[in-house]
Image 1: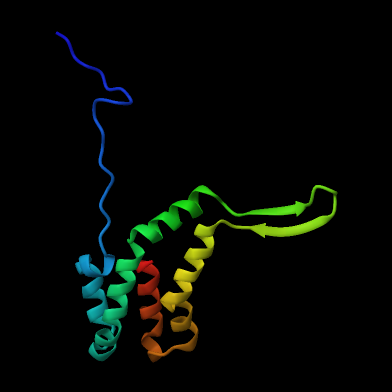
Image 2 (image 1 turned 180 degrees about the horizontal axis):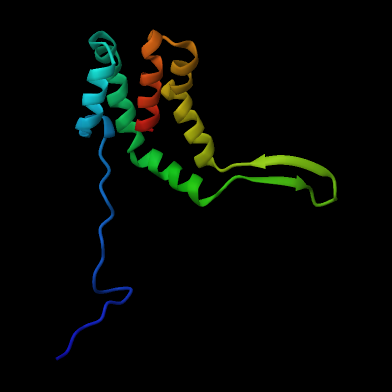
Length: 130
């Protein structure tokens, strides 16, 4: 009985998972939000949640995320001449993800509380989506 063995070029290859917008595909999240947010607040944040969920699984954000996980930040303490530098080095992925999180308004919701007592729920939802 002859069986072919898997190699680097033949055999079993697993397809990577397809990521979906967490906000539009997670029914439990919708039930939680309907239970804990007023309908007026939920209606006003739904477009932002949908857009944020789409951007979070976009090819560009996933590329930045991969870069950030592959190339961790490092501190350059000394230069080549023995002088103190103490410089933090981050890659483009880290910088672009920082911009993405700032655009999401996550910290604004926690500290400015635009939705009153429900602002933290809105902020945590944005955190889940990113």
